[in-house]
Image 1: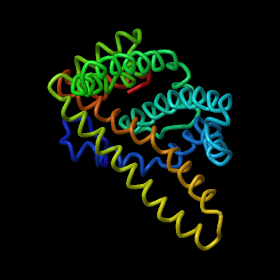
Image 2 (image 1 turned 30 degrees about the vertical axis):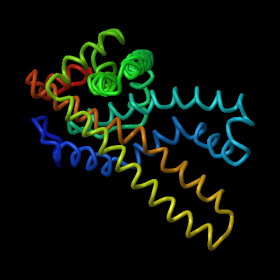
Image 3 (image 1 turned 90 degrees about the horizontal axis):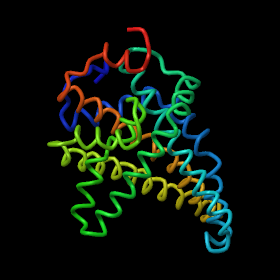
Image 4 (image 1 turned 180 degrees about the vertical axis):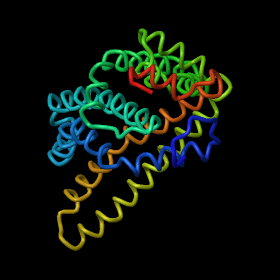
Length: 250
């Protein structure tokens, strides 16, 4: 997907396109992740090295809240970066963050509502929980890119993913698998560095924190490309429609 064409993509093309996009805009995406998740990530390291959440309950709660806020901002900003790339524009940090801020409430609401519904479905049985999670896999993207309420974003996601929920599951599994591979690599590197320099716990905590910064950008990028793929397949979505949706000139 060298030119980021809006066309139906196979499973492999979808993943490859998302990874190519991340590589080409890695500096921008990493900057977004550091600004939005840097403080809670540093807090994670501190908590891990000072006895864990049980000994830092107040700080741990603040950490979780900041992580939630940061993840929503990263999602919104990454959606903007992907969308700009599709239009052949150069994504800018300020534009991406401004867009994320303007859609913060909608994305947060969609994430919370989809999380609650997935949890309730999982309580009934694991398989329904997976189905619901896949059905709402592009709810955040719909909330970011389409006007409407959080509940409308969930409805749109459920509608778009009909017939493609196994694909959503596969994308989620592969995305998490790629992140886990990086985690394992960071753990091996941390073990080597810790053996040479000492302070293994510190090295592993810092490397793990660095890898965790990539979790939300990777997942958001993959599922933003998936969202556009679904709209192309079901609605004939094109660049002109995307440009109007973002309020930009074609």
